[in-house]
Image (cartoon, rainbow, N blue to C red; front, side, top):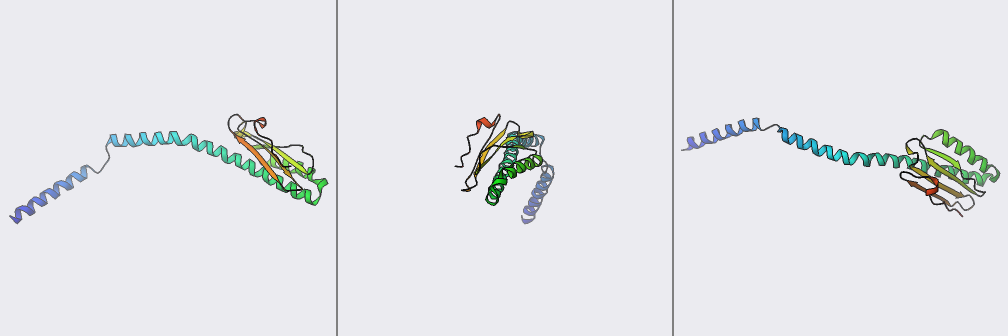
Length: 161
């Protein structure tokens, strides 16, 4: 009886091994389902990813204008007469350095200095910002807006006084 049981167990194991060799791959239906799921996920994720890259470029513009305002406020502390010229030079240098935004002197009267920013290249009509700094108090404000379309008129005025 034990040899019969052992032979039966051996036959069942051999049958199971043979079945596993056949069933190791995926069926065509399973592969098609996976491809459809991946396609749907990428169709949903790709537009979100592209909008995030635009927001990152807009953040670059906002950080550059913040750096310009900080430098101008520091220059005002050293020599108030040269601060406006320094602002003009910094705006020109930022325009030469940036592909994504265009910086414009807002024309405020010292001790307040301001810079307006509009999107360029891929951010054209998708980003705008208004900013200012009060060099005496050090108060700085940057208001920005992203979207499609966006102009400087859509952005609230920055308040530094």
